[in-house]
Length: 140
Image (tube, rainbow, N blue to C red; front, side, top):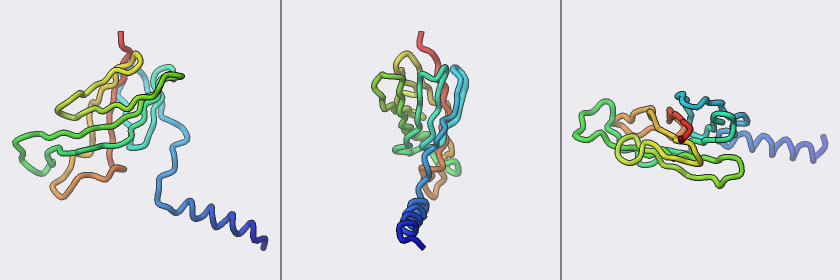
């Protein structure tokens, strides 16, 4: 067998076995003023396609576990990237409790409706388990 072929095959196989999630080649399509859900790492094209929103990560998830009684509900920070056509991209932080639940970017209001799953007492969810429900509206 050709050694170049074997090397190329081995490199391709190794690239597919690193445990990482492949990039989503086609973003979701979302409508203005309607809820849509994104998993961590997913992107949505909103409205007429001028706005792209990516759910990057969840930080500081201190929400009260669903199998516990808490004095305070806690908070989680949803980190999004928003970009519109030739405008600079922006990193936005939306909160489940304290802090901003919505932000304005380039004529659009992005609102966090819900973040799932809710943590359990044995720990916070893996990043890959999170699902953020968002609504994007045109800013008047």
